[in-house]
Length: 388
Image (cartoon, rainbow, N blue to C red):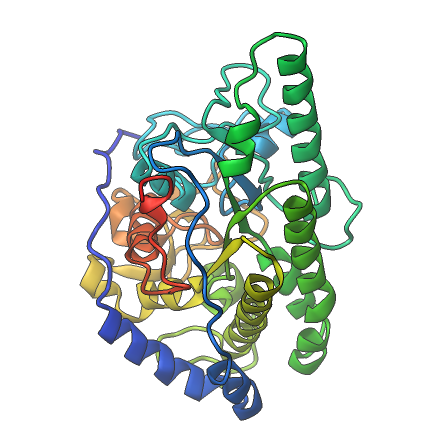
């Protein structure tokens, strides 16, 4: 497959238009009680990031495949083949994408190098931070390999080893001030919610959110107790718009909304994000001298489908790299890495890369929306971290 030119971030959706879309969707799919609770939440005040202006930005990321820059490939020794990475890197990097992820674009906004996976033994650069995210990761069970809790423990090991080297008079990629001033990003929960929806009815799924949220809270509190003060937390995306879920056989289309997405999956995502936003609000109040920014990824990612033509996408619900052809080109038994997978010619016309993850083009739009701060509480600018 021939390489494509790098995809530049497209303009973010207008705040007014996206807000109208979001409100309409919430009113349509979320229970009135949940909506009332969400709208009544006071926004916790935050003084801003505690990073000395002009200091070198450092980012530590925790999450799943949405922000995995090669961790799972390194951990399992996977030999990932093209077309992965074709749109930008021009070779596979271990990302579940044809190019850059949202976290890559966010790093670009800070003018720092892309985050190297914690488990990548060769060619890593940890001077601007570390990526602990691993594909398939969940919050629960908390002690399984690569869960959020384990990722945080890996961070503690990395920090302790760095301080040990410095105390011995040796160089370490990040010093004590770097750890203290760093931005800690968390993007996890999608696999937890998806797993529940695969086995339980909606009401029972929502009832199981508290333990998931408790793990995210525990991670933030452990990091805070260790000196971390700057946190950026992403909600989950539009799960009901994933070709992976839409390709599952169904009796009828009664659960399909006006944009072709599954209502139940999206209701669950909205409910989870409402609870996560509330948690972040509480943490902003409870954690002295800390800033916890919550960003609503559902509103951003649903808009990629609902207003796909605005961003130049032709096939919002069809997989670029998959198997089976229209309408979804997704077969759970034949992944993008399968020999007989079919690959679209122009990934910039597709929202979904492999049925679960976004194309680089879609990631660029999503990142631009995040950088606008229109979907964040408090409305702090990600790209101004360590600059003001």
